[in-house]
Image (cartoon, rainbow, N blue to C red):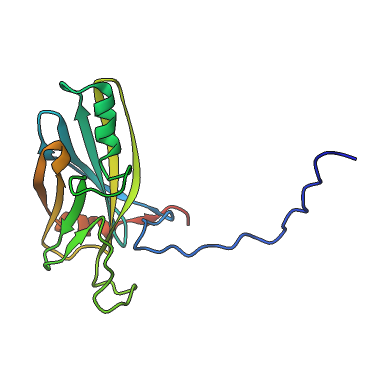
Length: 197
C-alpha cells in the first residue's frame, strides 16, 4: 500500500468561461493602440511620477504611470519602505499614501482608491466611470527604484480635457496633474482591432 493516495480522476468538463467585467480590466481579446505621452506629473529631489503612455481599447483606456525613486540621503531600507508604503500596503491606507485620480470634461472625478459606485446603483451604467489598477511591477538597485502603475479607465472618456491627477504627501509630492486632450485617444479607439479573428 502506497503512502500517497491516487489522484482523483481528471475533470473532463470544459472550464467555465468567466465573463469579463469591463470596469475592472481591459480586454484580453483586443490589440490596443498605443498613444505616447511622456509627461512629468510631479518631481521632487527624490521622486518623479511620469505619465508614460495610454493603451487605448475599444471601451476604455489603460494609462501607464512610472514612479522613480532616488535614494538621496536615505538609507536603502528607507528607500524600500517608501516604495512599500506607496499605496498603504503595510498597515492599511494612510493619509500620506500615493493616490491617483482622473478628472473628466463632464465634471466627474474618478478616484483609484474610492469605489463609490454609480449614483443610481446600476453597475452597468456607462455614464459613470471607474478607475482600477491593472498592473504593477518594478526594479531597481540600492540607489534607484522604478515602478510602473497601470490605471484602467472605463468607459472611454467624454470629448474634451482629461486630467490625470496624483499626490503623495509622505514623499513631499503635492497634488499635481497632467492635462490631455481626449480627442486623439477617442480617434484611436475606433481603430482598435481584435487580437484573434
